[in-house]
Image (tube, rainbow, N blue to C red):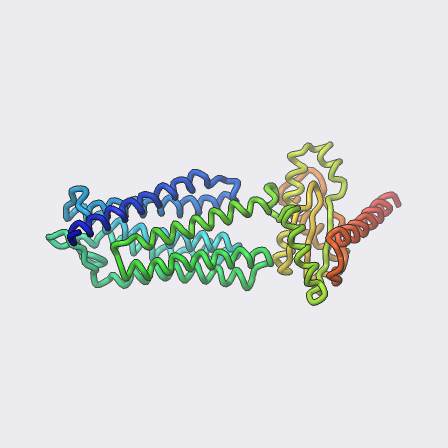
Length: 389
């Protein structure tokens, strides 16, 4: 096989590979529904997938042109090069802002921390658009050969800036997040490392689409992770569901001797009356308000929260964190009342709380739930007696 034949075969293979990535990303885009997360999260993921498709498509055309499977001109090569140099940092930027939002810390989601990285991307895009005439980032000679320009290091800096920021928000989320958020941040961190490796390989060999391949891999892993998350997440409240609660509590019981914890069970007072009087939509709204207050509290104490079913919720905190169930109940009810006023509900929403200490690895999950449920029942009876008096 001659060198020319080998080169043509190489570019044909990369074109087919890039086209395959574009199709895979298109499938992911069509399957990315609102059921995977909240609206802002899904919009950011869809934008990331969409621009990744553009990169893969651009790489396909580039490989076909380089392999002489289609006619090309200096202007066409300039357009393909500009497209690649614009789309790649845009994809990395979108990956960064998705990681920031997904990590739940959301440091870069608003204000100056968001404006500065965005402004740099805009400047980079404008420099690339001007490069066919200025040669700042790249230039194309009369033989349609690509050359890196004097400002090309800014292109590398821009891409790695967003990679580093993405990794940074994942690390921050790991050390400052709740138990569940730590697991999510760790997975995002590992996914963010894959495109970094791709970026290094792309600098070494610019002909193979390492960047889009590794971004696609990260997007695919993220999509699969979010699909898996649906199995353990309550659709209405976005808290952990019964399946995840059971998994988590069982894992904590095994280490309870060294790391004891407090298990809280709670339910909404007179929830049936709310449903019967104001309707199930109002009842769902009440559950969402309760869930928001519970999540805010567990975020503060680095705890675990879930919806066990119906109007029942659970919280798991380390021993020493809000050990007084009455105080915790009062705090939650105050926050719920505040949210209810803001939402202009026609009715009051309150909860009752029962708890149990877990420090014996011989306990079963049934033991834990039974003890907490018994105290919850006592607390509800006490509240009922108080209303009667």
